[in-house]
Image (cartoon, rainbow, N blue to C red):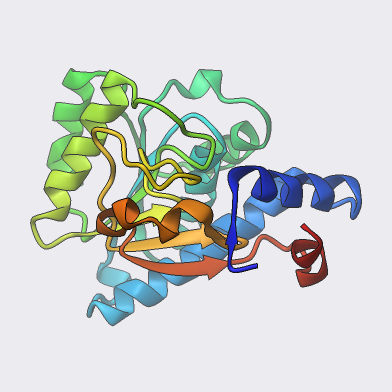
Length: 230
């Protein structure tokens, strides 16, 4: 199936964990590593050399943020200057996202908290040095309206993207409903969306087109037979 709904993607994850015994933490590792590889290829296509590349990874509080911590780690291992920006309180992280955050912390990856307007303003000095901004704020579970602080982060991300920087969304641009393709106010405007398992149902909607950019699919380690079954 070319497009999957929110529930179908959750079913793929559940079956991979329950039927095949693949731990969720491994699925997140696979997703983040695959996304990091695609980001490197994208950067090279934009003329950036790895040792000189500066990537800002904006992380939310759910599994999408967990993907961001994995991505930053693999970019760092590849020789990229990857800086993390935590838009939600990391003490509230749970499950697989909390594990991957802890690994990033133990690696002493550079990280800024951007939990309020003052911290966001302070971080802008460093954010403006990045060539690529990775949006790992909100994932496929998002519906409705963006909370005010994350809305402020998204607006800053979009403003930076207008000034010769490239924006890469992870799984789905933050603020976009992955089933309906309806954008919230605001929604990340991505140059590239790296989505997991399959394109999301909402990507086919005309309302999604200004936000998703080019779409690349990367795997999480679930076999094609399982995805076909879903």
